[in-house]
Image (cartoon, rainbow, N blue to C red; front, side, top):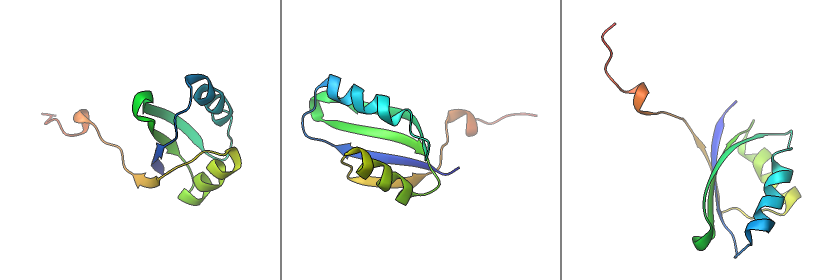
Length: 87
């Protein structure tokens, strides 16, 4: 399934409000929420989703009242993918 990074710049929300939304999104069946990086003081969240397409994420966020600024299809890589190996 394709990977997406979603960027959210939300108004100031309490940690309790964010956690209640996360609990609902964790149960979502149309896409898989994998991980979120967040900074509460800046009201910014960066979320990794696996979804069939960006339109599915837009629908999920609209259905749950979640604001978003951008949904970007991404590929994942890491240091172990680029280390030279002698096999």
